[in-house]
Image 1 (cartoon, rainbow, N blue to C red):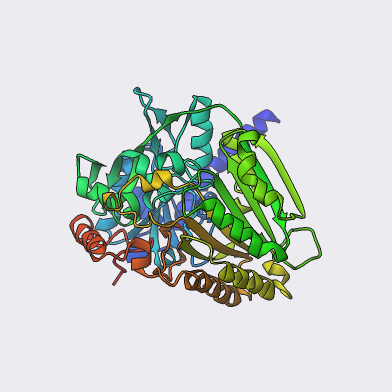
Image 2: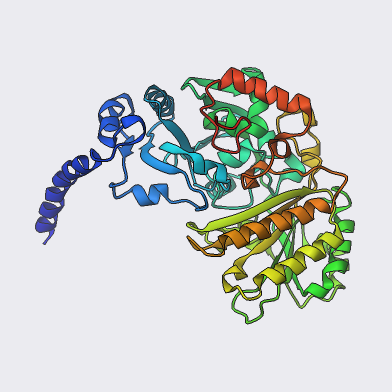
Amino acid sequence: MVILSRFVSSGFGLLQPLVAALIQSQYTFAKGLTAVQAQRELGPLLSSTTSIFGPVDSRWFNVTERYQCYAPPQIQLVVQPGRESDISTIVQYANNNSVDFLVVNRGHALTSTIGEFTGIQIDVRSLKDIVIQPDRKAARLQAGTYNHELIKTLWEHGYVATSGTCSCVGMVGPALGGGHGLFQGRYGLISDNIVSLNVVLGNGTATTVNATHNSDLWWAMLGAGHNFGIVTSFDLKIYPAEKRAWYYREYVFTGDHLETLFKELNKFHNNGTMAQTVAGSFGVIPDTESMWAVIIWTFVYDCSQADAEPSLAPFDLLGAISHKDGNVMYPEVPDVLGSGLTSDLCAANKTHIIATAGLQVYNITAQRQIYDLFNEKVVGHAELRTARVVHEGYAIEGVRRIEAHQSAYPLRQDNLLMYFDVALKANSELEAFAREWARETRDLWNAGQPWRRPTTYVNYAFGDESVESMYGYEPWRLGKLRALKAQYDPENRLSYYNPIIPRA
């Protein structure tokens, strides 16, 4: 049986590439390029561990699977570089053949703007080395690194770093748009902790970008980086881990407690001066018959329960229908927040209809309107029971420590990050209904702070927001970004992720 298995395996191993080549030659991609042509022309220029394949390959589904299925990119060819240095060559080849390219790691881009893309996917998931530098002050992360891997690897070596709170998301994408997370109160955003970037420009040129080399591009990469270059690896500051437990407490409130809850939350946040991490949401509890939303609020502290109790005392008095608490080590905090690697939040292949807004304080009237709207929309539509109205309130002292002019990130005056998400099945009849609901929710958030213009965290953008709301209203800021875009990407090759300059 063993010998027969080897024979059968060998026989089909010889046959499959021949059949695949014949089939793939029938698929003509943009500008007449075929998978077989790319294998023949590009393959010899790349490292031996690189893969090039088209839609008939057995790997295609897994590699092109996406978290966000609303307006997905149209992938015609996949190239998986074996080395960082391959990426420059791939970009040059794409440019020479007038084919667009899109770099993909975890496939979590939420914005609809990538739906305009057709061309080559540069899949970097195999480039996932994490190397702690000799000075023990930074780690080098390759382009395919994602949050869970980084947190786990650094923790095992006694370190932590700024990263997102969602375990399944890549590191590079969030960092280029700022990057919120649990340590931002101490250390700032992910982008505030980048030491140096290895970048491939839109023309295929590989270069180093940091505070002393290409310093103008450095400024742009830290907050608007998706528009300026492909990061093949970067150095990120690391910090000694304090191996103590984090305390958390989660409350569940009925809607009649909304006003008193948000009144206490505004006191708690104290206009951005609080030092704890807070996350809350409106949602229907699964596995219950009720269609009415409850309010779930979680407080996370990098300290003991005894130290946390004084600030939690007002919430204990509000009459929650239930609460739970506990102590976990830092790598388990995403699980507490419902954003761990195996959470529903990380499930792929869903159509996410989203909206976002940045706030300074909670407008209690607006929060009531949003809650009532939630119940109005969900009643009678069982598919919408998974909708969530999420409120993220991270400590921001570290974010404010960086002056607004020091990087392209424009939202340092935002204290609270709002996120609305309806996850639908593919081709759901409720898609238009959900889009309208998302817009209404966003409008209510923004109407609740009439003294401010709307702000959009670029990593949460849906694609219908203004450039100014994402990249800043100051004329000098957008002027500088556009001038740098003309200098470093004059052909606008990097223009599918919430572009500063939309494609012609």
